[in-house]
View 1 (cartoon, one colour):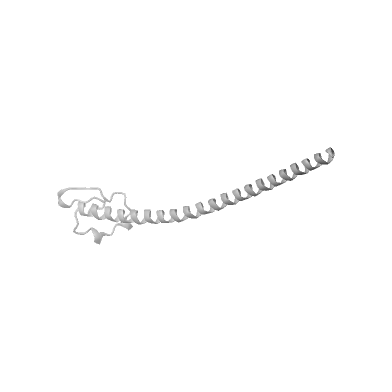
View 2 (cartoon, rainbow, N blue to C red; view 1 turned 60 degrees about the vertical axis):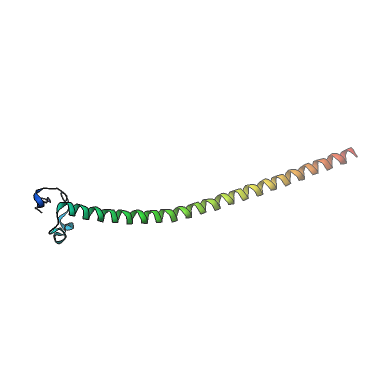
Length: 110
């Protein structure tokens, strides 16, 4: 591996590590490996990290979504109960008014 981040093992050159910060390049891992093996190694490492990250995001998203859904369900149920109670109260009030009106009409007729 040259200082520019290229590998010339096996008679070919690749720029696999170009642009990587030197503090992240562990030279002992790279010794004796060809560019293809190094590429495969890092692809597996990246795949593992991606899998772990996506699994964690999915877990967090699922639990937060479940909580939000439950919260919204409770809010909607509360609103529906209040609306139904107010509708029932209004109906009772209207029935009471109609009854009172009919009684007063009967009283005026008698």
